[in-house]
Length: 314
Ligand code: CUA
Image (cartoon, rainbow, N blue to C red; front, side):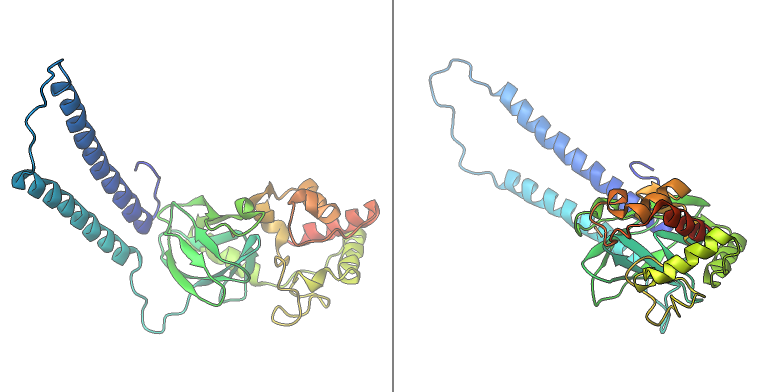
């Protein structure tokens, strides 16, 4: 429906509210500008030097221009409150979130109860309503996937909750909707709605620890990852260097356990291809200026090895 293409009951309610408000506003605009234009033409100066009769007030007119706008505002208020109540349907007592989404400068982390952690790519089963808890690790962000749900601020120290749901299989683009620093514009995300079966398979796979690499180059890359302390910022589940996900394994950067399985890098700034991933490890600041990653100063052989290792993290 104009002007969005909503894909959940919540987003449809918001789109309907927007359309209703737009139509009402258009009617008011056309009526007011029509009356003004009519008066200008009908009562324009006609070379008569005498002042026209002066009218000091009209109870009837004043009633009309007070009561009509008041009714319009009341109508808008009622449909807005109804929409708000619908999209923020109450939680069941003691209900726990189906996923926790955390805003970071400048990417999104999503954690699922089974231990799966991903970055800027959220999977949901279509046709089922999930409860998402929205948090921030640093400054105020705002989680927004226009086709699926309302906006929700991610405020440090505060948990917000939204219903996340899609009525059709698809990839729905989202973005941060609160200015949060240099790369605010590249704090995108994608919500992938899929069947229950493929969602379960994805969720299970994402919760599994990384496999130890087998090839010579990838093994060298894994050793480099440890030596260079990449694990101070990034976690890779199942590796000695990264340790457990709840321990010292760097929570500040995106979890890399299944980095190669993701569609995008840098919160949507580039497709996840080997050349783009190579750019991240050789010149992170050119890949996404202002991001928190410092240049690891790799030789080209080291970069090759590290890339080979990262590409095994499916
Ligand atoms: Cu995060 Cu804007």
